[in-house]
Image (cartoon, rainbow over all chains, first blue to last red; front, side, top):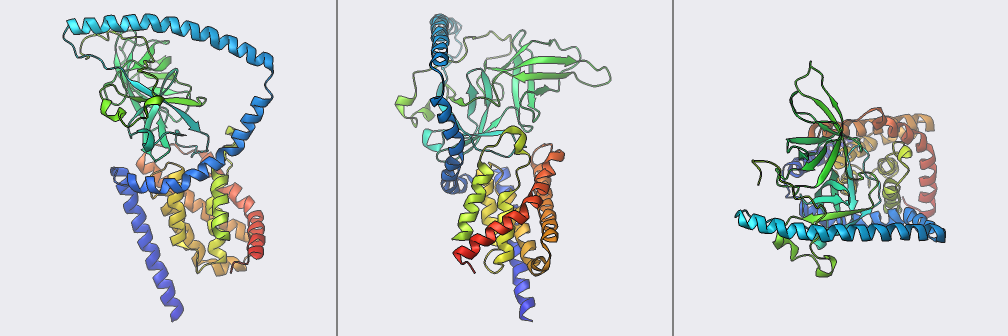
Length: 303
Length: 153
């Protein structure tokens, strides 16, 4: 008799927990109310994540010890020449930017406020291999927020989907649940690039057969969704398949960013969100940095 | 204490980065440890503990909150429920039961994830059930020895 009673309360408690889990799932899926719970619990978990990265970090340090001086010298040379080249480009860009500003002013168009960036480092812990997410070492304390775009030096990486006090989770553009509004650099054709779950592939699904898109076309973020600022490289088209039996073209593209190799990423604050910037420690922002020199005229209908 | 330490170890094993190829073989360490304690200390570790640990997994893995919590609640309940039977089993039969618990856990989690986002889970999604089953006897022996030395009853 007593046995049955205890098993009944056990069952009851189990059912209660299951219901509670389902409620938590739905609330977390539909809203951001659980943000605070996540932050609170993340402070418990973050130390574990840091400890888990130690082995790989030690290995890396050991590697640094054994780098030959010749290799370092070569690398130094390369970096130096890159630096000079980039500096030259930057000078030209500044002039262009000023010119662009003046022109926009003449046209009475809204001025583009430059985006600000903050460097973040990847925390190399293993996340679930079926979602394309990474963990970076910037969180609420650095002013990161959900929906914030993340770049690497070569292109768009993804956006922050979960913020914790010291870390945040970034959903990459290759995640199957992610899509970026893009625009063909050559002619301004607007479309959407979907993630496929493969780190080297994006898919463009809804372009009609007569759309002007070719292999080698560069896709830039169009800024239409309001998430990603316009004009950053997203992907390069590698195959365009025209199957007359299907309603749309089959287009594959390779992400411009080094999705599975980047160690450092940039969190970007949109120019218009200057109020967010007040939360960022001043010494960490090295002046307004723009990643991309192209201020393209993207045809009518934009801006 | 031994329970908490073993869970911490399981979390570390879950998080330690492995080479790309080895990643798909990684067993669900946390679930395995949970099953062990559900069998050994059924009146202290059960669905409630499973829920808490699962929530922690959700946070470390950047999943939806409640996803693994739900899965581990179910595993914890079943392991608790059948602990007498599982105790009677020879080790290989126990390992097979663990395989089915892991399979159920993965199926449940994968099913919910299918609802939430268009994620494609191929055959390799189920591989950790097999590696978990293979590692179970070893884990059982290790955890049992730590339990004896730390005298958890």
